[in-house]
Length: 217
Image (cartoon, rainbow, N blue to C red; front, side, top):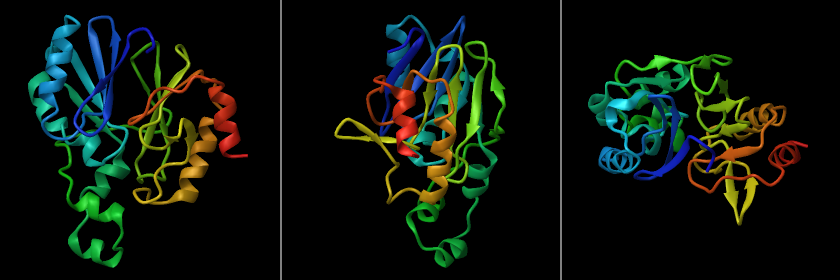
């Protein structure tokens, strides 16, 4: 893994700890019940829950935000989520019936974070000299990626996956809008990126930028 970037296996997904001085930014939070695994990992690296100052959610699926409630309560961290996914999580049953597909069904069954701070495209979080938020809708309406120009990595959430080791498009079944996802991936192809960090797969480093470009060519 990259210096000061720790991949940690939580329930249902891989999260990332970004260590910047005395502060820790947690990217994604696993399913509910993940706080115990997180607390144990932090203890092993000489840190505690209180070091987590912010939790950034790449999107509003339960394997990414289910653990937010307990982790935020234990750490006092602020929670960040794109407003399009905050809105999606307020979906009503009649809207699900009108658009009966996996995305709305998952949203109806997912508990939204309380008082999430909205993040916008182009916003920079104070991590590693500026961690840039990229709104990359498609997998969900409010999916975001996090790009570090200084460290040349991008955290893609579920916008991309690896199949037999190769970087490919997101899971079709759980992706709301694949054409829109393709457009979002095209944005990533313009970045100066050396490492792609996924939520369910090992990092990808072999010609990362060229691989992204090939996906949208």
